[in-house]
Image 1 (cartoon, rainbow, N blue to C red):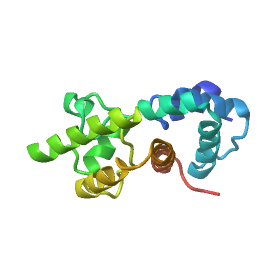
Image 2: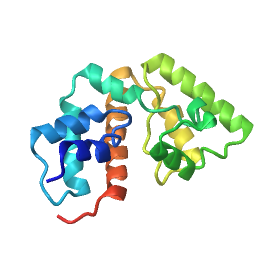
Image 3: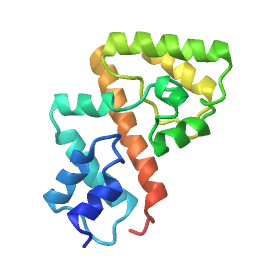
Length: 166
């Protein structure tokens, strides 16, 4: 079995800047070899769902704004950079960038965490449409949607890291 240190080193960033999830999953002892995307995802997700509301809010808050300040400064995690680039968010027109900036600000002000969406397979227009729809949600509904998106992002990241042999 992989050591705790190796497990956390490899999977600690699957939930953005939240290694405590990998630490708790390893400590719970529910992981079985061979590690698969589905198995690791189930363990990590169980820990995420069992975390306190404040801890889950911290995980949401660790995510960068889409096409935001960190992207412009080149300070995204490698996973986030690839995900945003794949959706074309690194190639926005000035008007599109202004709209993302406006929506990011309004969203964070309303909900207290950044807009989160699993961008794989989506284009900038799909993302803007979801953004404009979801900003009308109530906080509880949006917290639930954002946490579900975080879990989807984690699964997508794991499927690139691990073979699927069940």
